[in-house]
Image 1 (cartoon, rainbow, N blue to C red):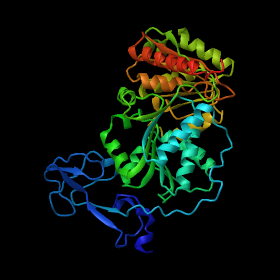
Image 2: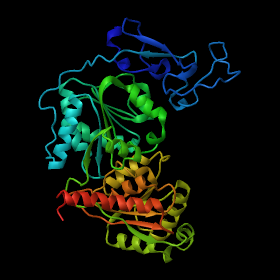
Image 3: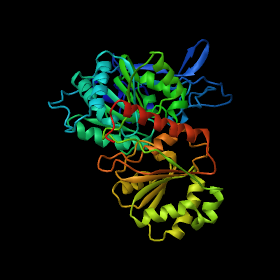
Image 4: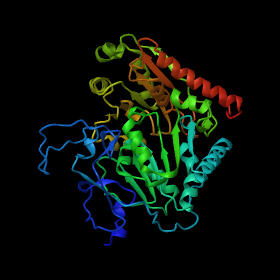
Length: 451
C-alpha cells in the first residue's frame, strides 16, 4: 500500500485508535495535535469544545495530560493525541449511465423543488428544504444527488437518528445501484469504507474534515443536532470550504423561519404531500389523570376502547408514550388485556430496536408501542397514530407534528387518524395542530390538494 492509496484517511480526521489499517507516511498525510488554541483557549480539534485542565491525570505520555470530556463516546482526545488526515481527492470510479434508476415521477411541486436543489448544488449554496412529513423529500433529492455524482462530487446524507439512516440507505442504494454507498452509525456492523456516497448519523461527521462537496442534513430540528453546537461544528468541518449544504425539515424552528423571511437563507417550501391529500389533523381526547388511569384502570379508559376497536378491525397503529419507564410498565398492562395481540415496545436503548421496527414494517405486528424515537424518519403504509400523554413536556410542537406525520403517508392509504390523549391542552399541542392546519390551508390555496 502506498500513502496515496490510504483511502481510509481520505477526507477523514481520525485518531490512530479509530482504524485498524496501517499508516504510511507520505507527502499527502497530514498530522495535527488533539487540541488547538483559539483566543488563548485550548479546544478539542474534533468537537471544538473548550478544554478544562484535569489535574493528576497520568497518561501514557508520562505527563499530566488533559482530555476532552465532550466527545468521549467517540474515543478519548488527549493533549498528546494525534489526528491523521489525507485531503479529499475525489478518487471515484466513473458511474455508468443511467446513474439514477428510480422510475417514479415527481409531482409539479416536487420537480420545482428538485430543480432549485440542483441550482444550489451547481452554485455551491446553502438551501433549506421545508417540506411537510410525507412530501417525498428523499425522492426530491434524487436529481440533485445524480447531478453531484455526475460532477464527481463526494456526497453525504446525514441524520441525527440511526433509524432514519437505516431506512434511507436501502432507498438510496436502490435508486443508485451502481454507486458504492457507505453507511455509518454507532455500533455499525460493517467497517468503514471510502465511498462517493455516504449515509451517516450526524455524530459520524466528527470523523471527517473537508470531505464533502454536497452535505445534506435531514431533520435539522431533531434532537440532538438542534441543541448541539459541537455537532453543528462537526457538520461544518466535514464539508469543503466551497460546497453545498442542504437542510431538510418538516418543522423548522423560529431561527430558520426568520432567516427565510429576511431572505438570509434560500428555501424551497412544500406544504403538501406528493399524493395530494391533506395532512391528517390530530383530534384531542381528554384522558383524565392518564398516567394512573391507564396503569390501574385501563379497561375504563377511552384509549382502551379505541385500541379494542382498532384491534378488532385489524387496523395497525403506532402508540407513542412519553418515556421508557412508563412505556415499559404500560406494555405489561396491555399484555394482560390484549393477550392475543402481536406487538412490541421499542425505545432508544433497545438492542432489538432495528428488528422490531422491521417486524412492524413487514406487517408481522398488530401495533408498536414506542417513545419519540420513532417520531420521524420511519414509514408504515397504513396506520393510525395514538399519542399517550401528549401534554407531557417531551412532546414539543415539532415532535407532535412529526408524530402526526406518520399517518397517511402512502398513496394507497393517504388518510389516517391521529389521536392526542392528554389531561389538558398545552401550548405545544395547540401550536402543532395550528401548524398542520396552516400547511393544509397553504396547500389548498396553491391548488395542491385533491380534496
